[in-house]
Amino acid sequence: MTKKTVEFGDFQTPLILAKEIVNLIQIIQKKCLNHQIIIEPSCGKGNFIRACIEAKLSYQKIIAWEINSDYIQYLKQTFSQEINHQNLEVKQQDFFLLDWDFIKHNLKNPILFIGNPPWVTNSQLGKLISNNLPLKNNFQSYNGLDALTGRSNFDISEWMLIKMLQFISGNDSAMAFLIKTSVARKLFLYINKYKLAISNISIYEIDTWKYFKVNVSACLFFAQGNKLNFTVKECPIYSSFLDTIPQQIIGVKNNSLVSNIEVYESLKNIDNGCEFQWRSGIKHDCSKVMELTLTKGGFKNGFNELIDIEEIYIYPLYKSSDIAKKNILSPNRYMLVTQKNINEDTFSISYYAPKTWHYLQKYSYLLNNRKSSIYKSAPQFAIFGVGEYSFKPFKIVISSLYKNLNFSKIGCYQEKPIILDDTCYMLSFDDEKKSDFILQLLNSSIAKSFLNSLIFSDNKRLITISLLNRISLSSIALYLGKEKEYDNYFNSIQNLQYSLF
Ligand SMILES: C[S@@+](CC[C@H](N)C(=O)[O-])C[C@H]1O[C@@H](n2cnc3c(N)ncnc32)[C@H](O)[C@@H]1O
Image (tube, rainbow, N blue to C red; front, top):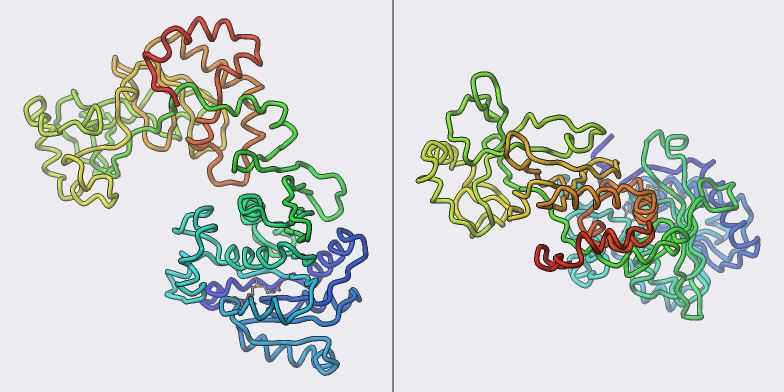
């Protein structure tokens, strides 16, 4: 792949797929397409233009924009007849420099925007030192998308698509784009968050391997504007262009996406906040120094050095890969835990465990240079995500990295509580019976159905701490007819032991 291909996210849509998409749009709009203008905003070699022309859609004009001058030349030769008949206007245009006010006042609605925008993220562009991005001042007024995607990494197509959503909102224009499914969902959320006047949104999954020889979860995203100030709350997802019944209907509830609105509605009482606080495991950002293995000769660090330190600060450790297993094995890793809570001064280690202090000093050049800002004002050798909860004897745990929705219970090992790293989430307990009860609730089919109604299996991370903190365990107990047991275990002393979420 050339640098230019990556920089311009250049993956041309095969004509056959462009034709299928145009055909589908005709079906969605029940063969009454009355768009005055069709715009392909990043048209490449023009396969969508060809598909629209061949489908004999009724329109006054097609407008084709593209940044790459080679493609513009190619299009001018290929479509010379249509250009001469003034049915097609081809222009070299950077999407990010479009004057949307001019378009609004000079082009006749309704417009159909169609195509396949560039497939590139801003961080890929950063590595290539490319400027194929919106202008900086446009970025600054870009709070909506920023808030949704996080500034650090987003597909540049998101910015383009949001511009077009804003354009079609409140009139009869429509848009149909081949995009990542994760981007399509963000657009649906955006429409709801900003109450855009858009209705009839649908997502049709695409077999990307068949058409592009890549495995990416992608879809055709269709959205239709309306003049009624109506924001659609549900979006059907079809598994192919031929399907007439959606495989699921997604929705937006409490400003978040719901992956199966029907199941969610039937279990929505569970979405009432967790009575306990889910926590992440310990973060240290220096695994070579802080993580140890036990060999016959003693503890070894990540530099494969045998180290001679006191055991007082060493705890058995589980990572995501350990707790994601069906049968969790005994720990074979350990962590040097330098604090009991995030404010604790670490200098006391020099009194209680001088060899450990010496070891930490030896590697202070690494520990002092940890990048994350959380360590800047913290004591030397500090860790993060540590507290009383880290040292409780029983924990209900789940991995944030693996697509396994099973919760597990872990206990102590060699008389020390097992510590988790920051890729795991936990609820911790002093009483084993309580932890067993909570495990039973979380692994119930009701809890699984509720979780499945919220998550999207193609997301990189299925389980997040905010998701866990939405699950009301007392509501699950109620669904399961175990509310008395729940009350017996928790309601009398719960507030004393745990801070409410
Ligand atoms: C994924 S390709 C798709 C091309 C065409 N829409 C299709 O479906 O075959 C993305 C296209 O966007 C063009 N492009 C990239 N950045 C652009 C920009 N800032 N403005 C306009 N076009 C751009 C690329 O040159 C490329 O032709």
